[in-house]
Image (cartoon, rainbow, N blue to C red; front, side, top):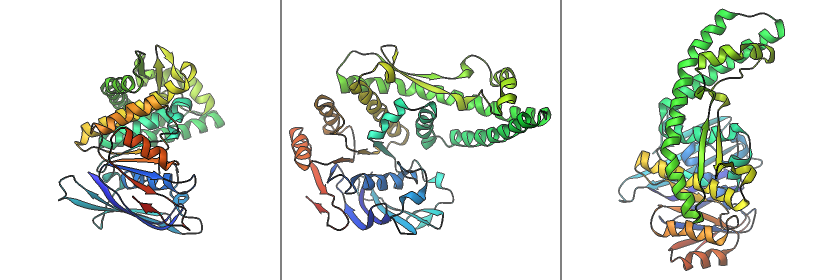
Length: 370
């Protein structure tokens, strides 16, 4: 599967624009602020029904506009099957269509046209709080496991209800134990299912991740992703019972899978504390490459790989190893963004990788293709 064409209307920095891509490596080059990352984000939108960078759709509209639209033509490698995906947003409503037929739910589209984004923002997975890591892994699992996504949605709704009740208990010093117990009993099976699925996913992806890290670094360092959850120590019901006194005082649920975390370790030590900058970059990149392989294994379709500003963030050795993987056809369609056209040509030619150069210029200018 590959993206052949894309058309943008009022999307971020683009007023109106259209691009045609080849099915292998496409290099987007241009000055900072020209719109390279915005174009990658539009491709990401067509897969995930949302921006990689903006939590709210309204921030993806061009300044002064009241809508945006993205249209993309996806082709299978046999050249026979073709699907046009359209995404529009207007007046707070988002619509996704395949061949002009609207999806009843956005979730029905996610996973059909997989994309993996590698961005400088991936460092947040290592450096930020546990919520970022949970979202990262939850998004990967949910993309191909509808049951897991439904469990998450149901758990979060019950968690909101439980927290609202706990807040009343904390403020008014009374306890509606009947309603609280009902919520607890509904949350418990969901929590254990989510826990089991997260644990199984980490066991599955761990060796893939470790292989990619070794290939990128050529080092013998031992890297590991460790899933941390209170459910390793006690059942959900027991954990809630033990934390009730604190919950009633704080007005929040202090035990559960919403408190889970993932420890990233190198030679047994936390990466964010003891890993060098190069090790941290390699760690986050290996996670993304493991995501790519997991998606491929689940769907039998190679995801589109988006590499944003990659040459400026990795040293030459790590770039060489990554491009060796691109050159040996490990990946399918690849997009690379960079500010230096000469550098892109030089690096890709050095690794004998056929590619197309697309020069991205600000909207007042014209973009060109080589």
